[in-house]
Image (tube, rainbow, N blue to C red; front, side, top):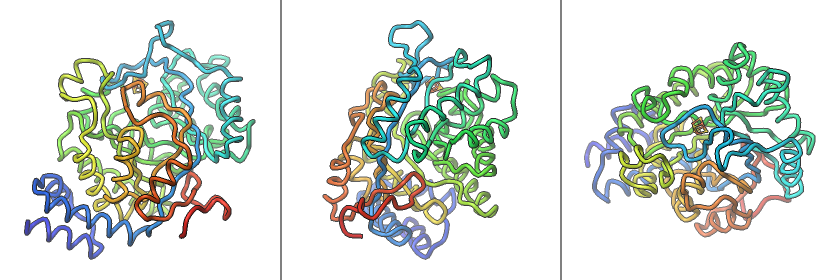
Length: 383
Ligand code: SF4
């Protein structure tokens, strides 16, 4: 108990905690210590970003599930021609974006499988740029939050381009920011089992650092609760913290938020399910890691978001007491986690999110993708 109290005291004084400190916090067992960690994360959240909990009106579009890779946790991917394989055509993309605008969305979030056939006149980059341009036909004001570092690497490889050239072209086509997904756990031993065909940890960090350098902000994520150790979890947080430090030293906070994505494996391939030994996240573990992430990253990444798709709205609401200050977006549709067997649903109304926030007595406010205010008349509750 004494050591945990000392670590928490230092973090309350504004210090960054070390990797060893983070590991010690994740190894606590008593309820009293867990409560101390929760209360510290909540206090730091309050000091770093205040009481208001934000949310975003967005639409998720998973434009295809045809993918050349075979991540061991993925229930979303299909081979071309396999039952359930889909590819949203251009009119479908425009229709979804138009519907999003009509419902007041400020953001379209787009990610999909790695489909070598997704090309226009032989180039992948042209296909991806057309996705962005099609979204922006619905409204030039929509923020396009799209394409993971894995998709960036895929385009570069397919077209024989540099990573930087791909990022610049996507930015110029209208991408406003990148999802920091495909990070899973930034440890190559874990990645060899989870996603052996994906970027290495170093390549993921390189692509996100390059995105920041060309002026594209990103989010950051961790897929937790499968085969990784607490040591690997904290090293992952440390790599994100260092990435943000490099970006801040260059004059730009490149990472806008941290999102914890607890593993849902109900429909995942059997070998990984057997190894993990359960289908749904353990809420207590996810909450402790949520609090430690706030304590570890909060001086550098102030916005922390739980995933209601993974945890359910009740679990995500509880996470707002463990260091989170944002509840994410309404999504309108989601395929990747729902096909994995998540029970949190794929669409939440604005009233659902606001109701969850206000059930804690905290004010709710609509934000844009990069945490700016949307408009005064969208403010819900007291600030
Ligand atoms: S997680 Fe992404 S890259 Fe991996 S198999 Fe699924 S769709 Fe493909």
